[in-house]
Amino acid sequence: MNILITGATGFIGQSLVRELSRQQHGIRALSRDGSQAQKILGIPAYTWDYSTEAVPEEALKDCDVIVHLMGENLGAGRWTNERKQEIYASRIISTRKLVAAAPATLKTFVCGSAIGIYPGTGDKTYDETFVIPAQKTFMQSICADWEQEAASIESRGIRRASIRTGVVLGHGGMIKTLLPLFKLGLGGPVGSGHQWLPWIHIDDLTSVFTKAIEDTRYTGAINAVSPHPVHYHEFARALGWVLHRPTFLSTPAWLLKLMLGEAAALALNSYRIAPRRLLQEYDFKFKFTELQDALTDLFQNRSTPQ
Image 1 (cartoon, rainbow, N blue to C red):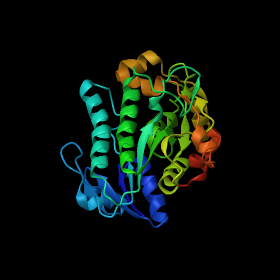
Image 2: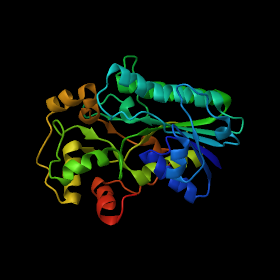
Image 3: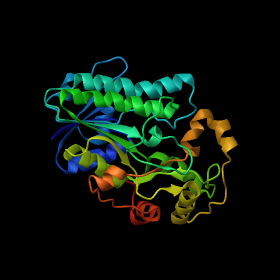
Image 4: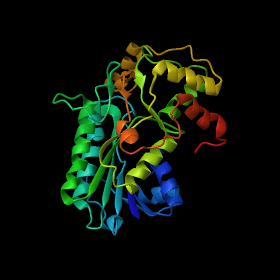
């Protein structure tokens, strides 16, 4: 298949490019800097400024599948009003333009989303049957509107899947941010430590996206998280264990809020999420269902970062 990937130079995107290339699909990328993306990925890449430009026609030629991962990093600093607009627009406007430009050859549109669509409080378990409320938080608005824009492509008979991703474990993302502190023995729980952390190993997430590309049963919203979420203090203890470092220091919620403002919600919110559709509808086989096994694989079984 001919597959176009946006956000391909990111942590998730690079893993997906490697797997799809191994399967000998024709892969191309859309990026803010096409020449740099081509150097990093070793595949054809096209420059696209979503905010001012139409989608390059050559990138869409004979395209069977679009995988849309593009979006400003939620965790890169405080959420000022300007930053919020950038985070929102990078997902909504880019999706709108991709849907409008979809070629006649397109069969499948796989779009990113996130577990931020759920309330982020308490111990209640949520799955894809959750009804999104009229009054939404900032993160809920981003995810809900992102999914709505992607779903508009279905009116043209094109299959759409929105992958609601949890915290991705691998040599990138949140782990990359936390690793320096934990290696210094300065890691530990954040806030109370009792908030739920919905995680997924990068290999399993890559498999979810691959299945969504290939399997026509994958439609609509799909939670991409392990069946066994953990509390944050359990995660901190497990990461310290595989790194052979103590994890007795904690970061108070008030300090995180002082440093990050509203963006502190990324670490303090509690998301107990179940991958109901993956397990019950698609019989998806997770490679890693236990946190300790996932972290051991990343930091003890692999000689080099992926």
